[in-house]
Image (cartoon, rainbow, N blue to C red):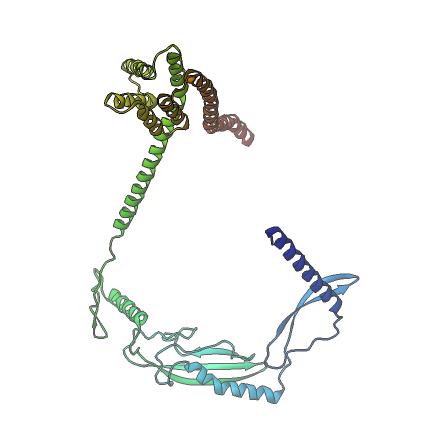
Length: 399
């Protein structure tokens, strides 16, 4: 099954099901005359309804209150909560005389509408959220706790004295809090310097400054620089390769045309090749500019002078240039030597005409590339001119 078919099928099925659900909700909607209230203890519920007035429908929301407790049930519920608040308060602690960890101090008794207000004779050792602040304690401290439980117009009070004890086998976080408290006291007692504690609960404490992370930044910058250099080197190689290929493409029509001219005048292939190289060397002496295509021809001539067969040298010339037209030229010259070709001069003339047409197309393409490169500077110049024109007008308008 094609993707488009699957897409249409899913859209049709989903749309049909959505319409069916919509029509069912419209058909099954009934006019409301009453709402069942939540039972006692379930809590109030927020209702979202629609109300119709003068043929207009408006959204309407309100809070549906739970059924109030009866007097006897109200007292029984409060009494039950008072009996259960103590075990809830202890949480993970064993008893009221040994409070080591956090306690539970809810604002609402669980699963009821009973509100709880907490009162302590000192908040120095307990947070409102139940956390115990005992990291700096050395001895147990008594704290009077009071909880007022309220439901509608009735309330009961639960009271209990607890003993907040120093931590036993504290975890790492508690140890750090103990160190923080001890350092705070040491700072209050000293002026010029703070002597860092070297012992905590009988364990040695060793202090260090964090390692200087500048070496990481330096390493990162070095790696980024190396990556940038490698990338730049590759780009430079690609740029040089493209420059070499373009130079060889521009020189190809001239090379083929002159070879065709010499060979049409009855000069052999090798002698024609030597003449092109000699003319190039004289030109280099005057201009000091080297051309990749002629350098490859020069290398081919040296290979033939050193004993490499002429046909093989032409084939290697085409392979080294790595451009299709030069590969074609090397093959053409090689086959002429091996098999013989009477109309080689005509083939070279045809190749020359085609090469000049290709050079025209290449020159046109290079001109288009120059135009695209000049687009951004022209846009910047236009923006500068617009700013120079608009700025005086804007200043005069504000004035």
